[in-house]
Image (cartoon, rainbow, N blue to C red):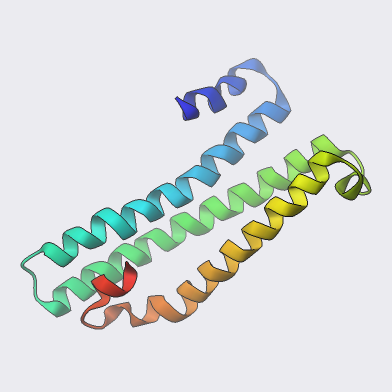
Length: 139
């Protein structure tokens, strides 16, 4: 229902609505697949009859398959977010003088925290996923 509501504006030739719909789609794809990765796939691997090395390889493959999707979604969110913000704000000073701009600054601050955690995980946790027990590490 959420996806349908956000994509409704695509059919109406509303440029801001189009960018917002693509923005929401990109922003929801990333955490949705991350949730699947951490809760469903890794649990399935942990419960399988495979050996520790085999499970570690499967988890590493899952994470390595997820990373390009996450980076693509992040690029889509960044491009459509900047475009949408520009269409809404019109001038840079509106970033700190309007309620939309202030809400955007708060949102970007939270997104920055998520990006830092994601970068740390990508840089520190991902390389260790080839070790036995990695199905527990990813959770």
